[in-house]
Image 1: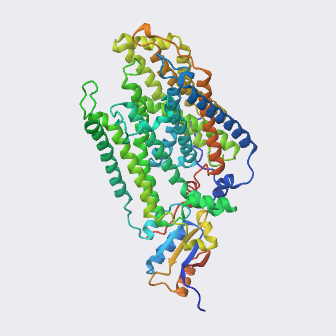
Image 2 (image 1 turned 120 degrees about the vertical axis):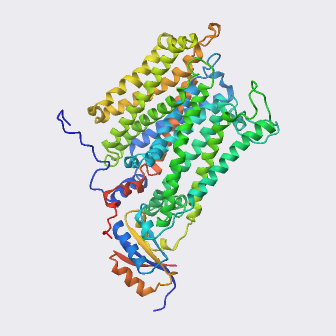
Image 3 (image 1 turned 90 degrees about the horizontal axis):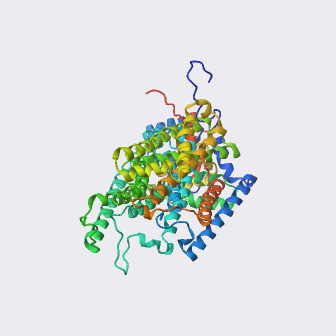
Length: 457
Length: 178
């Protein structure tokens, strides 16, 4: 790939020379081996400690109330909403990879969809914690759902916050179903290959007697396609509804129509960054470079570049509309973002989300694993900052200077945030150890030998 | 030689092309009660085994419609009938505000129908099936392709069918215990 005029050669999706047996053995041996890698033990230990920190923070929150957090008038939405939006956005890449790329017949997705879907589930689990904890009385969270109760009360269906309850819980349920359906044939593989009674029994129960019958595969394929078709509008709707939480409000900086598309693009952007952050160490540790190849990393880099540009467009439109609207509050809001007390955060986010990813235009950058890894971390940070800036700078100075204030996150805010990162990592570690992190049957399907050659009629 | 009744005869193949060819030959030879077992979906088998379109899309459509009606009905009933609340003079029946929740319930009901429908149409969970009695069948979830002609087939004949299967070039033909 020098400067000559020959077009750059795309690396293959899978390394050549692999067979049905070899890919099966490779992926299933990670799960079925007795030896647990040291990296896993250390990583899981750290993640587990952070999960304990989360439990401690939640316990203290339940005892003391949300006064332990830095949220207060006028900034009633602090880390809890920032982190909620950040986590749920990360989840979106998993659904995008599993559903939209399936419908578009992008076979390269087959190496990364399984753990991207797992990532979705765990990210949604982390996201779901925040609004519940922010309720103040989290043990009454079932009040959010419509059910006949002695108080004679029902949810207010005109409120975006109620839409959010439905969107996020539907998203979590459908993601779980999609992920489980995808796992069934691989669970059967683990059942048939495992030597130990207990694991054979457990995988056997979960595989539900899957035997790979052609009749079953036919219905199964229909089911996968239908689920993909349903998950595609769902994933778009979820972050749209999340953006409605803001856009339906009248706060300057929130009340804009660009929010839904810009939030969805941002979600996919941060999600792909997270997939990359996870894929790069995983393929290294487990020696999966033949299955998660440079082609995958390059494609993900390209998706990041494209969605990053949409996000950059969103920032520009925000600033332009604030100026063009002639509304003094809107104008002040954007000026305050750029030059006010949180200006550092704003410019850091512009650097992380708009300027740094422009390096992805160069194929040298897209071919360098360490640079891609660094880039994915930068984008993750940038997207977190974006949500911080949207939530906090809009609230801290609204219409009346008498109601201005500053947001100071407390140690409990940070410990809860770190704790969810720990929970996310711990769940991922468990997933990698006990379930195949790459969809085995979908890899078999894209091997060249899977092609059926028939004599002409 | 009188032995116990069997479920059928199963032939093992190395690659999907031989399996599809074998399935076509078996259909051409008049066998109707047969099934193929593969480690990944092989599209050509749908044609080779003459599998009909399944009813899952229809079920999912019904599930989705019910979810939509149920979600919207719930919103209408709670906001207009059970708990009418005037919010800034907006109509009790606020159609645009009801769309997001109705949309989500549509997707949820359709997705649940898709998964339960898939399991139901496939008769899963089914912990026991005779083909699992064949020791080598464990490879059906790894790298081998199987064609099973069931004893229930009117043309089935324990020896004749075994000979027929041998002619298709399998690695091995075995009897499937009931």
